[in-house]
Image (cartoon, rainbow over all chains, first blue to last red; front, side):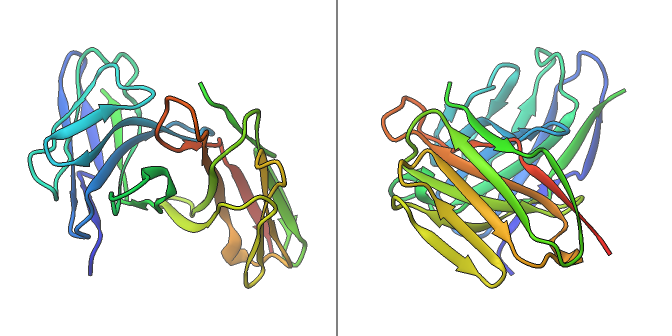
Length: 116
Length: 113
């Protein structure tokens, strides 16, 4: 079955600690995305990548970093500079060729990050 | 930045009643997508509308894109308990600097049996 795998499902971070959220897809999609979801709010775009070795900041990139060394993988690091990291983080992918905003996005099951 | 407003934020209905959620933008959208997120789950793509005045149906769900491409609606006829979840719209301004979709805040639907 093709899909997007996010791990871990739950993650706890200590103050001043960096943590990395994993996102792997086997859909052969070129584009991948990271969103943050807070209670009662929509999804806000953190970073996106249209192809390997390239990524762009979204609306709320401060305090986050990403890499895209492989087509299948798009890990997100929540750095200590992110002062309010408690949220539900969703990774998504889409086909990638053409206009990204016209493409349906496929989402993983998410990682819930909490501060200890 | 681009704002996509969605109302209502919450809606409780009795099973069998109809439900509608509305999505509004102050600027013209190039397209609108709708997603459903079940409680504890992840968003799942439902449909995309591109043309002015477009109407699409999926069984009991009817999606509309306004003539001015600034608003959209999702209407569910005769709701069932399986319709429970949060419905999000997402759209993009065609000529803006943002290249990606902006999601509305969602409408959380509760269906009472």
